[in-house]
Image 1 (cartoon, one colour):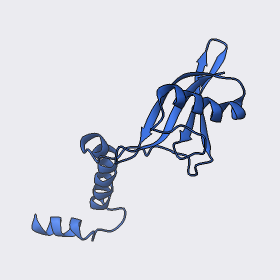
Image 2 (tube, helix red, strand yellow):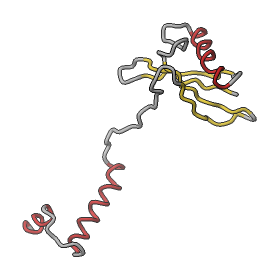
Image 3 (spheres, helix red, strand yellow):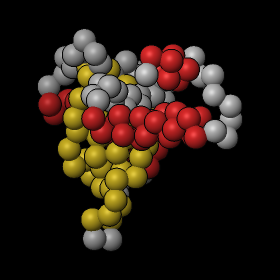
Image 4 (cartoon, helix red, strand yellow):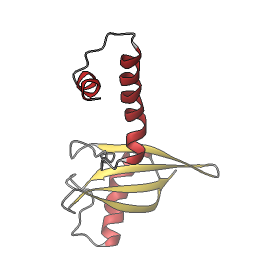
Length: 129
């Protein structure tokens, strides 16, 4: 049994042998089963526009005949929303940034995007057009 484990560990079997096929099968099973069993704590990274002058636009579906879009506006954008503003000022700042891009829209709601240190880096704004 010790020699068998030694040979498996150092991968000494020839390609095409039954032991080689068993090792490859175990590796493939590990690759496909382990993400369901082991919590690797990996999560998608929130996509934030790279520069303060960029606005990231994503389609979020339809509401009747209207289209819904999510605009991501960085908090360091000139004239854009900031954490120090009141809610009404922030909504006006969001519309000030969005309307030159998409025309007249209605702001449905917005949410802050936080970094790892719970600092507001951007705002996601859902608008109906």
